[in-house]
Each structure stands twice: as C-alpha cells, then as structure tokens.
Image 1 (cartoon, rainbow, N blue to C red):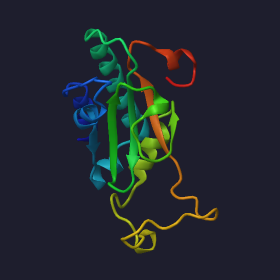
Image 2: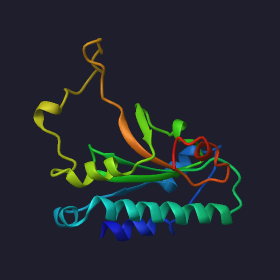
Image 3: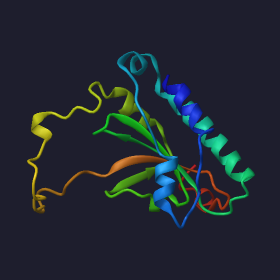
Image 4: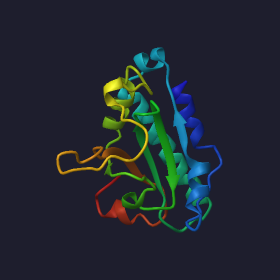
Length: 168
C-alpha cells in the first residue's frame, strides 16, 4: 500500500502560494504509514524509486502550471508519529517550514531506511518522555533534539539550487 500512496501524491491537489505557506502545508503535506508486513516486504530502493517517480510527476505538473518560482518536494521520517511525511512547498530547501533544525539531503535513502526500520512506529519509551508543563531550560550539556534529515529535491522552475550542485 505504501508505494501506491506515494504514487497518489502526484495526483492530489497542489497549492503553490508563497504568500500563504499555511495553505500550502495543509494542502500539500501527506503522512504515510505502513504496517509491519508492508515495512518487512519493502526495500529501501523500492520506496526511493517511488518517491523519485512522484517528484518527477510533481515537477512535470508544476511546469504545466507555468509556476515560475522555487518549489521543493521534501520527505522526512516523523519518528514521533511513526510516519513517512512528504510535502511540496514554494520554498528553497534551506527554508522549509520546520520549527526545529533539519539537515537537507539529496539522498532519500537514509530517510526511507529509518522509516522502514522503525519497528514500533509512533511509540516512545517512558525514558524518552519529559514531564508536561514548562519547557525545561536547556544547558550546554543538553543541546535539545538533534537535527533530523530531510530529503529535498527541486520541482520548481528556477532550478537555482539544482544548478548549485547541492541537491538533486
């Protein structure tokens, strides 16, 4: 099912509205799950190929819309939700709408590998939880959550970061 859902993203509604990134996020973001059988039967190359086909289809759609700006298709493993998340936004890869630090990458493999290897998706151990209430003060010894990896690929018409050689 996961490969089918990834393919369907290319045909879903798509909004590229730089002035309203909230609408972009709400319309263009997908959280995909996979059961144990699906995770066990899929390989990283199969899922990567499906994501790359979807990115190509989105790139073609955006070209047909005659949109003339930055557009990035990006994928990350949301460990807390146990989901593989995909989105498209009218932003370059270094300006994605995340509240935390992330590392843009041209290689989807590690993101997919982490998702497929997650044997308890969406489950956090008791030791990983913090009490509710005020945000704990961070010290130099506790830098907070580590940046997470995000696969980014240019699907817009500017191609500025593709030409720079940083990303696919």
